[in-house]
Length: 208
Image (cartoon, rainbow, N blue to C red):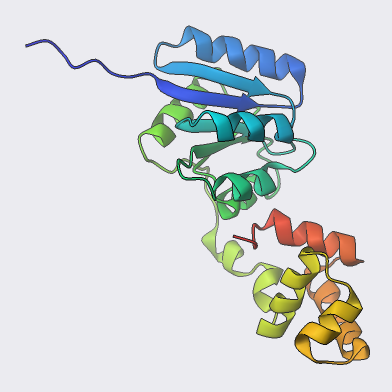
């Protein structure tokens, strides 16, 4: 009895560095386990391709302009055939943890071996979660968990573009009370202004 034919893993790549994108493309095209469908240097281009042609795995640079990987994952998770995401980025700092919180299924460090990226993608396609060691306690201690229910509602409304006056009407509180809540939110998240608070909101994929 002949072995069943194994279908290659459809994959898309996105990286703002053209040299990295070219090198990754060549690596995946040489590996018979994968079928490279499309590549892009921007989140917008990648989003358009991913919405037109469903794939099993997407490899995305964490710092992909302009949306960033977290927002890109949030948008694509609303689609019917949701791909599984592997974040390709620097493994210093909190990037692996943030990638997991954003909804990625795997993380591959740029400093790692090529084979490591390929194996991570193969494992993710098989339904596994692939991340370096992450202290789950730190995930539970993130500043976002210190926000009150009302503060989280205000932060979500803020991310939708609502002004202080809009917030005042929506929540039936005075504009001074809105400012008070915003001040508390900024302090708890260690941000300085509205724009940074909104960026924080999307970086933690709170809109999904």
